[in-house]
Image 1 (spheres, rainbow, N blue to C red):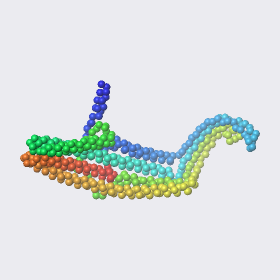
Image 2 (image 1 turned 90 degrees about the horizontal axis):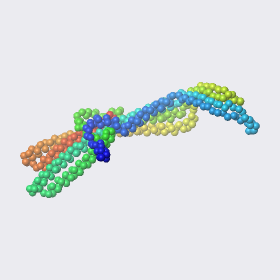
Image 3 (image 1 turned 90 degrees about the vertical axis):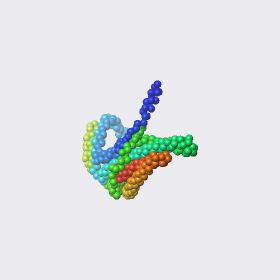
Length: 430
């Protein structure tokens, strides 16, 4: 009985739940639940924390120490290590120290390190924005593919229904001797092929659906039904002829490469900073006892302090920094080339996306014309069939042609929508 209840509960939990979801909702859920976006968001937050760490370089360093100790008696020798004598020592010792220092100048290394951290934070934020747009385009493609698969399923179900009607019609003719067994075999073979194709379509629907549910953070048993409003392309805006300038301003990958050049310039300044001396002000206070610098030791506490200015030069940087500077300059050259390459990639990406967007509209116009012709042909054949002037096979072919043309129009609209979002992604505004 218990086993039956558990099985029933498991089976109930896995009952598919159909859910109509709009594309806008898909975008919201993907941004909220995508693991890849959570990773890039975490990287961006970490980069912001690195700015705070870099700004700590501007703060003074303060060291405080306190200790207590046991002092053993001292032993005094002659210079030739003879005539050893015991010298009594105060046995309790204490020490307290406080030291502080502040770097006044270090070749602008501190300010350049902070500015570099800020640039890297901006790069991390832009990388997150780029990943967000990539995820939006990915789920949009899967969502539209799912819509197309449901359309294909509709076509094949209609074809199976019509093929069954043909088989019934051929069987009726067999009884009167007006059809051959070969005709029946041909249509039955067609029926099996259609059923096999339908199975493949249903499997593809399940695969795309599970990809979407994972990306959107939905339960596995959710069956996503695309909202038919997604094929409404009347609200899609028109684009200017030249979008390259806009893309160069808004495309995250272009901004990232531009910031990489600035990072490389900061690396050059940091490498050169080693050539400059560092200037620091410092102070300290010491409180310790007993006073062991006297013989015999004085069992009292001694407190002293000092303030000062120090200059420190790393002479080794005179012959070591040249390689670091050369390396930084080489990185800057690489960043410049990468920036130019990204500008070229942007031009080709915009041209390709814009061309495909226009091509999708051209295909749509062609399919709309085909649907008009298929509808007119269906009206003619249907009229002839009603007057017993056409065979059922002609009627079914005309009906099937009209259905395919209608679905081609829908799929063409979906292609327009996808290419629209792809163009937005290439511009950097998706």
